[in-house]
Length: 296
Image (cartoon, rainbow, N blue to C red; front, side, top):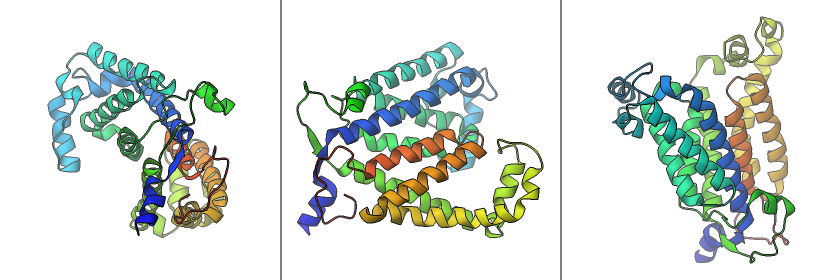
């Protein structure tokens, strides 16, 4: 039992696997904060669409919890912008491997504050990236690797450092939970159960290509509706088993690229899921050692 526990959670892996995830998620957070910056006054300050008091009431009505946010304490749009600019600067430093843990902690607190301050403007992606930040806070980050040395696949100035794999496993589990939770929620929706959700999605303001064209292909989209459920149901199994992992990644990348192309504001979500796939692959391992775990 102890041997199995060790092989799943504590077996050492190349630190570059963590560095790739750190860089990937830092880029995602950077893109997110840059997109949010022009709208920060209206969404996060008291001069925007709602005061902190009204947002706290809305957060409680949506979640039943208490709103705790930096942006509840900050009244000035200038200070809100400074806070976001600080997060942007720290994201850049994290990408370069500098002050990465401080950057991830700060970005986690900012992202959590955004969810609590403007719950109506957030999506499921906000919760996903917040959970992933929490995992990274307690994981090795491979901070001695920067994007240049990582892409070159070598850095002679740095030692061969290895870290326990527990952070990778937690991201693997999070990825599987996201897919299965999505299937569970969709099965409770009338349009998904009846095969009509994709057509209605493309006809709505969420679709990237506006018009009535989806109506002419509704038979095809009805089949794609059920295919989507099947893909989300099977992807965790394909990714978890080492022999089918490459197939799962190919299917997953095609799946998420399609989502990003057809849907508005789904690019970051699709990129996040594809970056999570890095946790499943020992990209830099010279030898693919067989292990007891299915998550090698």
